[in-house]
Image (cartoon, rainbow, N blue to C red; front, side, top):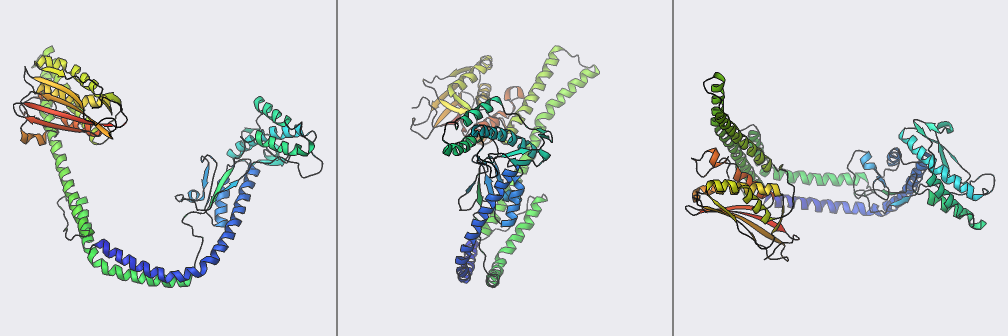
Length: 559
């Protein structure tokens, strides 16, 4: 029996016992507590709505409302979340308390409307006369003072508030001042004033019975874009039950279930602890550099699979360490001799034994450029393998890639006496990729083909669309570089993409390349989701095939 099955059986036993023991406890209390919780939630909604609107009315802004939300959470015990219609302004008591915000509860959110409603001030006097002027003044004063209040709030100053004849709050600085804390009561712009006049005058022609309602509507329309905006508040979270059960029965049940769980854990520990201890000791040794540490891995359960996975990981780490040592040795080998030659010639010229002729300086400069190429190739390969190589992908015709590579290597091919040709394709073959990086990969392949082909030979570039038409999910563009060189033995093909590997070990750097072009080319093709494949026959030649996916939606030639 696997470890998973044994643990599952234990958990099922504990779950059944716990469910049976607690069901009768919860059933007796849930109905009553749900009723009490509903009444409490309604009272909390009323309290939250009143306190938040009081804050908006007192300050003219939602700035500083976090303190109110925190206080309400402490007094009601509710998780509270408020946000505006756009979702840009959000206050969550979970975030204020330093915890990750939870999903909101199932209860629908309720609207908090903080904007004032213009009406007749409940004091001595009658309806302001004329009502048009009173409405205009309320609109203008409110628009200016509410911006003043927001500036004061950002400066940490609580404004003073009084209500005008239309029962609209008007905000000023402490003591009724129009300047405080670097803030000044702003002037209403001419455009705002004209809109306010137009809105107020709309109520001049209505009957007396409808005048007050018209004034209230005009005020609301002219001030909708200033002041605190409406919020939607949600109480509770999905993981809040809002219910509790009596403690003593729950404690007794918990003790019984805990005892069963402990007993089961003791039964399982004998089968678990020993391999875990072995794994812990082996991992500690692995961390200290002992890459030969392995753990016994027997059995078909998850513990045995964990041991085998650990051993595979240790094998991979050991292989990676060996590759790293081999790479360092290869780099040192590749750079030691040419750098020693450069140093020797420079010291000889410095001591006067060798004349610094133009030919010698040109030769030394060429050698330095070859070493720079090796370093640049190493950097490109490191970036590519780390996934940090930059790609600028666009839609491009694969035929253009081949034409560009052929043009770039035409002089090299002519100098070597090699015919370089591109097989024409009648229709576009579109791919999605980085033109510069794909040309870099193809250039490495074409350059190798030209260098490994004797005079009188031929290098041919071709492209084909392997897709199944526009109805296919994906198509493939195959770009081939074929040469008539000496070919590569079959036993050497597995090492073709290794760093610093060359088919002809007798070739120098001037003719054999840096030994990094093929690894770079393969990494670039892999990053484009493609494949780089090679086939070769000694005495006949070599064919490199770059296969790139063509996502559905790119229009091309088709087949």
